[in-house]
View (cartoon, rainbow, N blue to C red):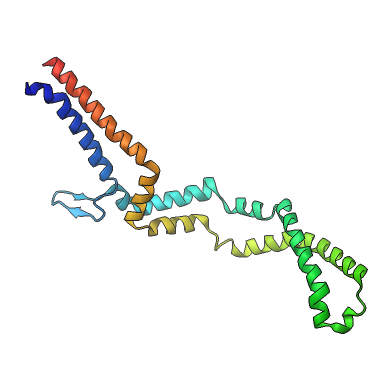
Length: 195
C-alpha cells in the first residue's frame, strides 16, 4: 500500500527542492561557513555585480544622457513654456518695472509693452535651446545614469531587493514551485508503473 505514496512523496520532494532553490536566491543574506563550503544567497552575494550590470543596461539600452538631452531640447517642448514666459514678461513690464522705475513707466504704453514683449519672446525662443544645451553640458558628469543606477541598486538592503524581485516575479516563482511538484509526481508515477 505504501508503494502508492511514491508519486505523492516525489511531488512533495519536487515542490520542496524548487521552493528551497527559490529561497536560496535571497537567503542566507550573510555568508555562512559550513566548513567545507560557504553558503550565501545568490542575490546578496552578487548584488554589486547585479547593480553594475543593471546600471550599464539602463545607460546603454534604456535611457542614455543623449535621450534626456533630446527630450529637454525638443523645440515643441520649449514652445510649450513660451506662454508662461509671456505671462511673466507681461507681469514684469506692467507691474514690476513701473514699481522699480516709475519715471520710465510714464513713457511706456500698451503698444510699447507689446513690442518689447514680442521682441523678448522671440529672442528667448532662440535663447532657450542654447541655455538648456549649455546647462546639460554642465551637468552631464553629474547625470551619469549608469553610476546613479549602480549606486542605488548596490545600496538597497537585501530585504528591499528581495521585496522588489518578489513583487515582480512572485507568479513565476510560484509557477516554478508547482512545476517541481508536478514533475516530481510524474516521475513518482513513472517509478510506480515500472515497479
